[in-house]
Length: 194
Image (cartoon, rainbow, N blue to C red; front, side, top):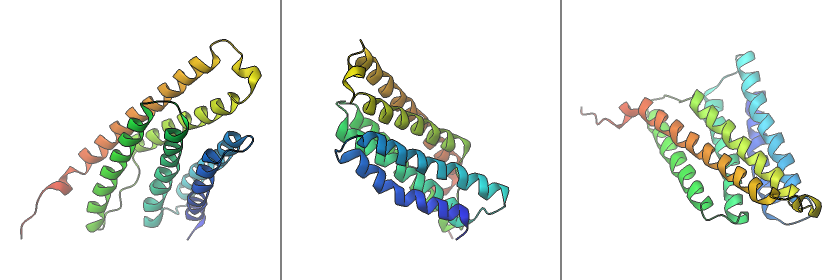
């Protein structure tokens, strides 16, 4: 249990706190959720940086890091389904979850052969795109709590549209990275005979 893995565990612990801040209504709860999310996201940045710099990459880290990322971003999408007045948000969540189940299944097949699949560049890009969309939406929702901001012409309408566009861009990145993972590991689907 080295420092990078401890940081990953911190991210796992912060995830339910983040979701609670999103869903439990109290003054500035979006700001609180945003703060927790940013701290959790920073642990993702630093655990990888420290692991690479100090040669502390472990199989536990390769397994736990993407799992912690998935838990954090999926929690945000679950919160958005509950909080956003959008009929497309459940579809976005469904696509993200379907991709995560598919990739996790392939990872498990690889694990049977003792292979731990590390996050690819496309997977990391997907995570970054999701985090950008989530940070924007939380900041936007908090800004909408202020009457003076809501009074700005077109702020709510166009701000909401931009947020949904960012979410769907992140969903597209999620699908592309999922296809890449499955294609890269497609040989695990081939049946073997003794």
